[in-house]
Image (tube, rainbow, N blue to C red; front, side):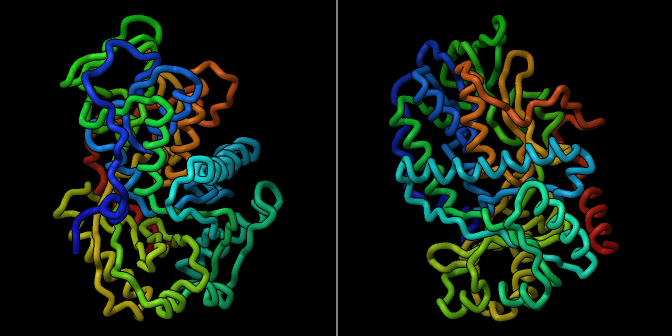
Length: 425
């Protein structure tokens, strides 16, 4: 079993790296070479602005190519709970933003002819306990009246026709869910940005941001400096680098994934007959899907820990046990890949985007970032280019987490809390 991301290991190499030293000046400097940053760079270049993207490692090396491969509508919370906390109008606006984001990813794949196995397949949220079905029913009824008339609530018998497991008591089917090969999409998106004129510099970690006036900054790296009329922060967790304001608001939480060897076609049809994306209703639950070459991708918050080779390996064994418990027919199926990554969680589990001390940002996708990060890259590019656009994640305030300065000391306690909630739910 390889301790590396399946998406990265099976994606083509990025060929659009800028050559030569950093230019002396750019209209916009984007910090971060994941979906948000590269999508923004593409849109900015198309708008005729000079854009330089700085990435501390390889392009698409972090969350954008270390996730579960889902591209779904819907926010991180139960929709009824979101309405209770935000009001129906705001919650509906958030839901629509995710739907628009899926459509934008689909359009980008078509326009740029990115070979990434994209398809709309539907997302099925599975009730892990009988008591969870009431919450799914409440959400389904509300969503059907307000934001998604095509949503379906499935009973236990219907779910058994959807998935080869007896573990679930019902489910919520959202038909606009999608999936794709994250590595191939990310590299394809970066190639499109480079073709459009964006200068992309991997291995250029930002060491200092020096504000000159207004939005203008001098951006320092170990390989030189560049004068930016505007700066966009698109760094996900932001737990490395000179970004303390963001580090007090983003909590990096480990999420872990295993991928099997290729399954026989008949076995795959038995396990996932409709080949959708799937997520369970537990707080510490699982998410899974198949790949174009008939592998099972199976992930979850196996342990409330940071990602490193030791942690990834331990988490992989926990995930293997969970996979076999859910699908006993896979007990003899070997694992081919295992990896972890850091999810940029916020206290309200919603993205945040705007401007702080002259720096623009879009961060905090909280495990639902594939589609939203790509879409917000375009939204932020339009704002930076001073085009008329709406930013759904602009809030008046974004409070820091009390007692938190970028090191998530409380993750083990959070793990115990959510495990207790799952036991009692």
